Length: 86
Image (cartoon, rainbow, N blue to C red; front, side, top):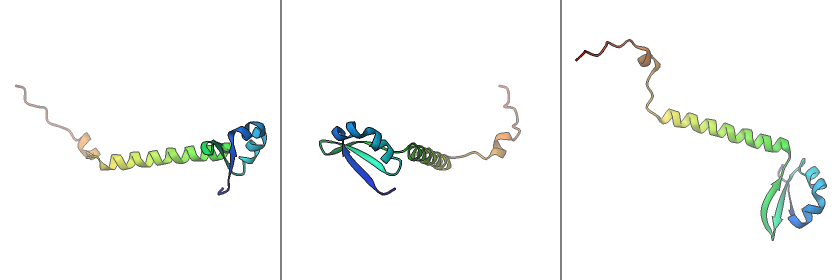
């Protein structure tokens, strides 16, 4: 999906139905005064992008956890002698 269509917002108002159909094949960038202000894209592409972002967040969370000082599970379940009363 490398093709991107750019359309001024003023033109998009009159062509919305057609642009939504176009968005199933390629992204449509909306321009206001020549600057990008929004993007129309298919629901499939949107869901794919959201899933990718969530996967990247999971990878970052795992990497952050690996950087922490971890206690081996065997040490967390080992029996401890009670502390002396005192």
